[in-house]
Length: 360
Ligand SMILES: *Cc1c(COP(=O)(O)O)cnc(C)c1O
Image 1 (tube, protein in one colour):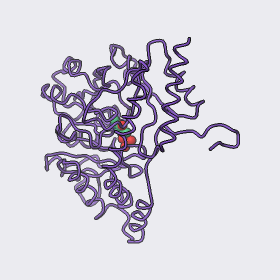
Image 2 (image 1 turned 180 degrees about the vertical axis):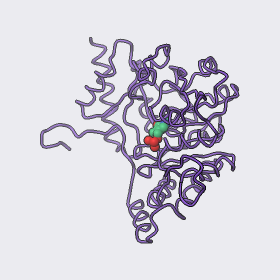
Image 3 (image 1 turned 180 degrees about the horizontal axis):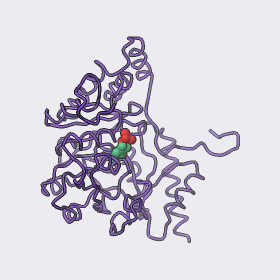
């Protein structure tokens, strides 16, 4: 199909998978007249945690809120330090800053994009109160080595719904974990998030501080609630989750077979990977910006896997692993709403880019 201009239809970098069931479920909530946080939010929390084998959950307005409230409930406060990776979105930085605490950046392993346990260890100080460990792009971080550092870990599972580490579900390994249900995440409620923990006490605290109404006004309270309309969407998305993950792995498998001969750096093979992103590492001579532009000209939207590393925002140096990721990698479309013809189109375009690069 071509647009009137004759330009190819753009394949978006990501897109939610939604159907009539979501429309029906949201419609039912609206017809019921109870649209704010209520019975469906509670059901969503229970079914999400039961389905993934996690502790207990508190549904929230966003993934950033889940990180912030987890830190708050753990008692992180000004003068504390929280270790976070330098290769992640700024949501993580802001969650720490909102507590008044200082973010301390650790480098990532350029083979995985995940936090490098040895570098994290070097950043530990007397003031370190917690560590936020994202499972980047759906690939589980090295939890065994990170937990050995004996710093309370909040797992950032915003990109890793259903990922596993050595057969165990991520999100159940740290003190708490944070999920995001933003439109383009693994599953969506439009905007939304969940904080999860095996500690009932911690979740009770998060449930207490997600709201301000009819409580003691002893804290800096705010409103971080999810609505029943969002939970209605979320419940349908949970029922699709197995398919979502299966399809992500299938598409990643197609890419990996097709790209194997091209001499690109492909995602590590790991049974626990759910391929929230499929990232490819270009050779030293290739410029990611140029690839992104040329793939866009072919009708395919690609992105930097992380828009800009945190140490670059903060104007600090000493993050060679992150720099390598930033300078080499691009993220190509991988999501269950992709059609077979679109997958073929992505495969063809990447092969063409590589052949062109080799001729120069
Ligand atoms: C999306 C994301 C967040 C933030 O989630 P929001 O729901 O957008 O607030 C945090 N961490 C990571 C790794 C993410 O991908």
